[in-house]
Amino acid sequence: MSVDLAEELKNLKSTMASIEAVVDLGALRGEIERLNQEAAAPDLWDDQAKAQQVTSRLSYLQGELGRVEGLRRRLDDLDVLYDLGQSENDADTLVEVEAELPRVAKAVSEMEVRTLLNGEYDSREALVTIRSEAGGVDAADFAEMLLRMYLRYCERHNFPTEVYDTSYAEEAGIKSATFQVKVPYAYGTLSVEQGTHRLVRISPFDNQGRRQTSFAGVEVLPVVEQTDHIEIPEDELRIDVYRSSGPGGQGVNTTDSAVRLTHLPTGIVVSCQNERSQLQNKASAMAVLQAKLLDVKRQEEQAKMDALKGDTGGSWGNQMRSYVLHPYQMVKDLRTEFETGNTSAVLDGEIDGFIEAAIRWRRQK
Image 1 (cartoon, rainbow, N blue to C red):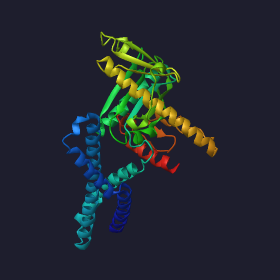
Image 2: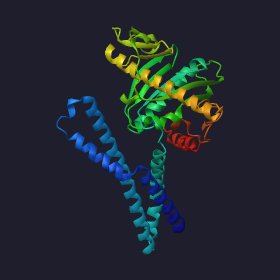
Image 3: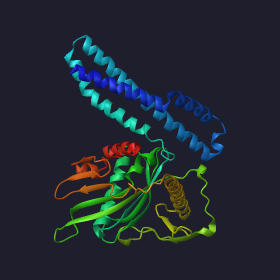
Image 4: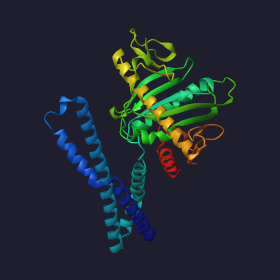
C-alpha cells in the first residue's frame, strides 16, 4: 500500500508544480498588488464601470490565488502525514492518507483542467442558448430539461446566472432560452457543451407509450467586452417591443417591456423579456446580439484560417452527447467516450466529469 501511496503523492506533486508554473504565482501576486492599489484610490468610483471591473477582477484573482495556495497546503500536509506514518510505522495514519488522497487528487485534476483554458475568449463570462430541435413536444421538454441541468450545474458551483429570455412551447417545455453565466472562465468551461444533444426515452406525451428520440441544440458564446469594438449602426437594427409572456402564452406583464432586436444584414434575432423595464431589456438584448456578432466574426476568421490550412473537417459540435433513459440508462459523450449510468444525477447538474473530459479532449485535438 505504502509504495502505491508514495508514487501517487509523487505524481500529484509533479502535477501541482506544473499547475503553479502555468498559473505563474509571482505574476498573479503582482497583479493582485496592483489592483489593490487601484481599488484603494479615493476616486475609484468616479468611473463606476471601471471600478466594477477592478473590484471584480481583484476578487477573482484573490480567489484563484487562495485556491492554488490552499491546494498546495493540503498536498504538503498529506505528504508530511505520509512521512509520519512511514517513520512511525503507523497503519492508522497511512489509512488516513489513503482516504484523503482521492479527494486531493480530484481537486488537483480539476485545477489542472482550468490551466488548459487558455483560448482567446476562455476567460470570459458565457451566454448559453438552448433550443428545441427535431422531436416535437418531446424536444421542447428535453430543451427545458437541459436548461434545468445547466442552471443546477451553475448553482452547485455558486456561479451567478441570469436568464434573459425564455420562449415557452405550447404543450410543454420551451422553444428556446438564453442565460448568462456571470463568472470568469465560464465560456472556456462551458464552450465544450456546444452542439446537438440527443434524448432517447419512452415519451410521456405519447398515449401509446412508444420510444421517442428528440434533439436539442446548445450554443455557448463569450460575453462581449469593451475591447471587442462591435459597432452596430442604428440603420442595421429593427427594434420591436411586445408584452412579456409566460408558459402557455399567459401574460405576465401589462406593458410592452419585452424587446426583440433584428440585425438586418445577418438576420440574427434576439429578444429579452426578463427585466421589468424596456430599457433594461433592450440593453440585455443588445449584449446578446453583440456576442452573436462577435461569434460570426470569429467564425469568419476561423474559416479563413481553415482554408489556409486546407481544413475540410466537420464541426465536432454536432451530435455530441446522447442521453438514453430507455431501454437502459446511459449518458455518453460521443467525442470523448466518457459515460455514466447515473442519468438522474447528470440531469440534476452533475456534469463535471463530462466537461473535464471534453476540455482535455479539445486540448489534445
